[in-house]
Length: 41
Image (cartoon, rainbow, N blue to C red; front, side, top):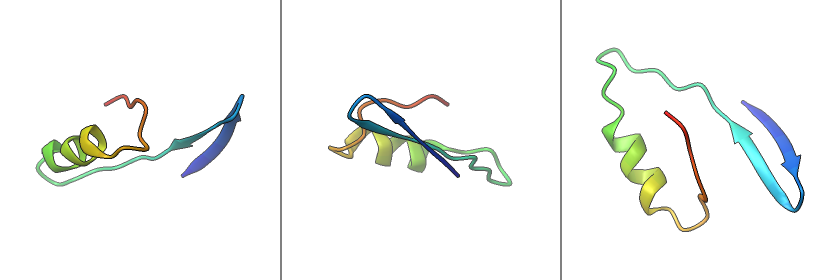
């Protein structure tokens, strides 16, 4: 994990892996979490 500041925002960088490369649960969480402004997969 890495943390950086961008103006007044905090930017977190995570590396996530799963054996079956199914990231739908992670994407679902990120899409619905009110404090997540954007993410890349």
